[in-house]
Length: 102
Image (cartoon, rainbow, N blue to C red; front, top):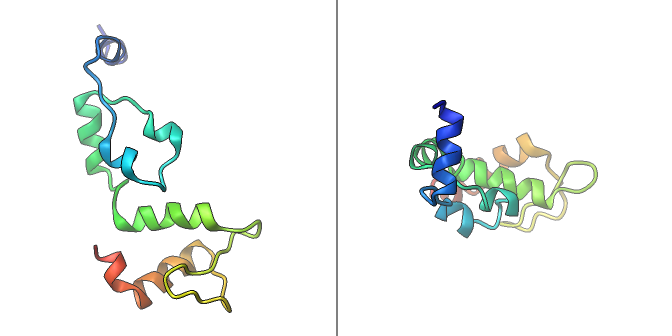
């Protein structure tokens, strides 16, 4: 039996589970929240960095960005500046370090 068949069998038998961190995170898509993982897949997912603060901030940026791919900072309410993804992370790391280090 190959790895893919084994994973399918585990999921069918109910030996797979969802990631609780994904379920609680509003920046995660409903599709990702519903992903079923075997224990090995869940372990790999949790070690992947997907739930790091930086990745979560980037997902929130992607939710908030406008048609031009830019958004304003929710933390400081900086209405004068719109950031693209890279500039937004730089802004967060410089001015909101306490949030990024959590």
